[in-house]
Length: 433
Image (cartoon, rainbow, N blue to C red):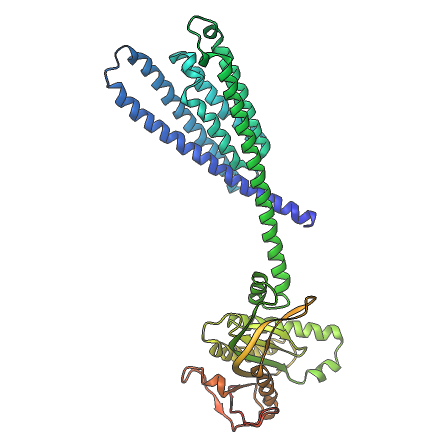
């Protein structure tokens, strides 16, 4: 992928990462809000129980936890609002905000532990459930898809936790009441676990980011290939050939074949330069291709002064003959419109329609393949198009097409059966325009 396209992709992904940051802030805000509601309900219920001497200590702890969850919820909602404003203005989040926000979240947990130490004792604080919030913040940092931020969160959490424990426990650890759980061993173990979790979160974050970028690059490249391929064949065909393995997209289908030819094109090209001829064809074929696409057909190939269109392959709704007839009539009207607006010189076209079984698929060699249709129906449609010159018509359709139309759907003039080159039996044709 070229550098400019790579930069554009990175910028787009950066905006997606902002969305992930809002999700992370939302999860934390909702979690702390629910935590505040639940803790207030539980503590209110427990406070009514006869706890005797432990009642005052419990009330102090419950007040600290309730206040902490309320403050944390407010901060997270404010953080979410800040991120949402960046999303609204399609701005990336500065790395300074991510690091600062992470430091504040970790410091908030440490502050809660410090308050618990003042109310319930240091031994309880360094092993209380709020310590697990360090791991929650680390795991949620994965959503930022930035390994450095995850490592920063883990290292900051480990340093603050160990420093807080060393600040609170020395006098108890060496005193009479000192226990193994108050010694430095479990403190360092917890700090190590926090750091290891951070390393794991950083690895996962980096892997997810790499996979996301690779997937995005694959989608962009596929869209680019489809866009380029779709300029040479129908987008429907391009989509199918890219989805399935080349050489295996071969099947027999009932289709309606449309041949279009520009009348007196050779004489027109003789008096024009190649550039004028190409400009004329581009101006003419542009709207005509849109007509075919609008009616569900595909342009199988351009024939210099015309094209071959297929209705009913590679996909069909069962009304491909009707769609082809409507497309043929609209093609005539579109050419008349281009001529009346003087976008092109006076032009007449001839259109031949025939329906039948054909083999559709990708044919060729391993060096070059082409999606095409093969069968007698294609040859006969070409012959019918040539008959438009003899009968002074712009659109001729075979009996095989007309029998597939709803009765009275299209006004048609039945012409005498004609003998077509390469066929023994005469062919019944109808003049539609």
